[in-house]
Length: 306
Image 1 (spheres, helix red, strand yellow):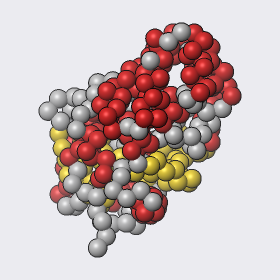
Image 2 (spheres, helix red, strand yellow; image 1 turned 60 degrees about the vertical axis):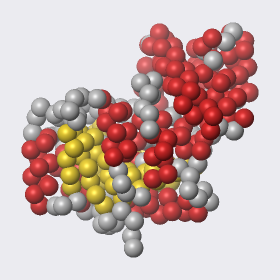
Image 3 (tube, one colour; image 1 turned 30 degrees about the vertical axis):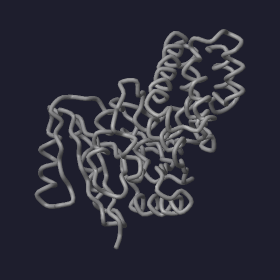
Image 4 (cartoon, helix red, strand yellow; image 1 turned 90 degrees about the horizontal axis):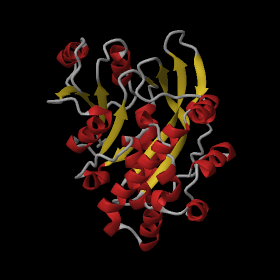
């Protein structure tokens, strides 16, 4: 019997693009899916639109949060509520390829054969497209120059590679989500850290959705050039982002340190302590433990920011 895939969609005032996304989910070639729309206090027609879909399709349900909790907690709480074998994350404004679930699930099952009863995360690429013109802007990982091969614990502490709206996790991740610390920067980053430490992170090198770029994006797919310009213009902001990453690493160590191997625990301790380490030792540990980013330009900037 086919395993059910539970799709967790986070919604907030998404009436403009919601129907196009829901239609793409219902058109999937893999049909054993359930779709839970987790609304975070929308004040527009979002819930009305969803309720209209529910009337015609039992695979869709609506969960209304009692208060606005933000997209990170909204997604993670949605995963925690799932009773399915596999869970996928979904934004309210993208368009999924018809075979997205099928292809991702195939990669997941292949990874599980080598990682029995452990948490696995599979993520893919996406095609950025301009919401206004419909023009495609290229593959997310290609234009952002993110190295999807570097998903070991050291690299993932410093830089997230996962686009949440492309990700699938298996049910084995649920025991690691009993607590949701405030220090989590991004939900997909946290899931990747868990799977990298205690299971496996797998990249499927193909786009599986159209990733809408517009003014309302919570997190967008900016180009590498935009990344560089933003870094040069906001040194103070970048140092605060680094400190936020250290705090996330410290929270991860606090929660999971006793489950780590000695080597993993040492790596996590060194990362969490980077902000309190001397100038020279910070840079030494950056190189020794792999606390680096993708590409020479990012790492030169990181070297001077640390």
